[in-house]
Image 1 (tube, one colour):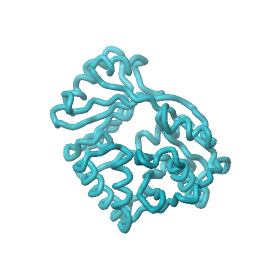
Image 2 (tube, one colour):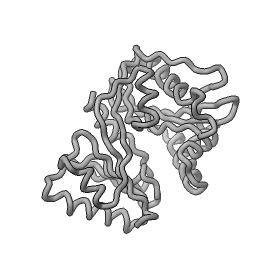
Image 3 (cartoon, one colour):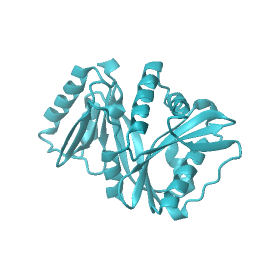
Image 4 (spheres, rainbow, N blue to C red):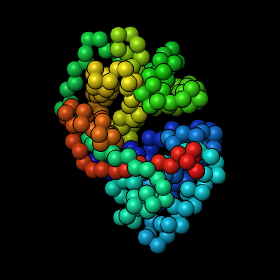
Amino acid sequence: MVHELERAAAVANWRRPDSVVDERPGWFQITTPSSKGRWHNRVVESVMTREEAPRRISEVIAHYRALGVDFAWRVGPSAAPSDLGEILANHGMVPTELVGMAAQVSRVSVSIEPRITVERVGLHNVVDYVHASAAGWNNDPATAASLLADMQRTLADPDNDCQFFVAYCDGEPAGSGALWPVSARSEYFLGSSVAPKFRGLGVYRALVAARITEMRSRGVPLATIWAMQDTSAPICQRLGFEALCKARIYAWPSALA
């Protein structure tokens, strides 16, 4: 199952028409000059020797700084060298702790509070999804507008296989999340967020329940997630997800460059 999590981290990346992917053995990197968002600009997989790591890291940092974009570097179980995180921190990058988790869909049972509803996202309610997502991630108006454009393009794409969900609390957009296919046997819970005023009311649990129900309807047996250690991971564990491994996301905001 750790392999499924590693694969999810690689495939679950937002892409724009100008996104460039550098994929080769031991390396997966995405660059999107038109976006300042880290979800469009990141290193997802990196396997290097200890000797080459400092040079490669300096090259990546210089690459994104030259574009003036935020970016992130994921250090997962397969990353090398073993002290890659320490080297990134020494370059000024700031880590967020993640827990790789998985659950057998048949064993997850989540109830939804009566005041909360969850809908699949389409062009008819995509503005509500963006509103909830922007509030949950504390995005500025420019980032929210960029997300709306990305979502409209994605939803209109006949080849899109990612499903999006918006949660409402008392009729107000309260939370957002997505479900990304990884393989025939697993799907990945991506990008869940809850607006601050609705936290602690069961919105996140409702988003989990909606995606579990969708997976169950199609017979997909395994749900995976990279959950934030201090927020979503404890909730997922209570709902039946099992912690399998850990990773860190190292971020460098271009504003600090």
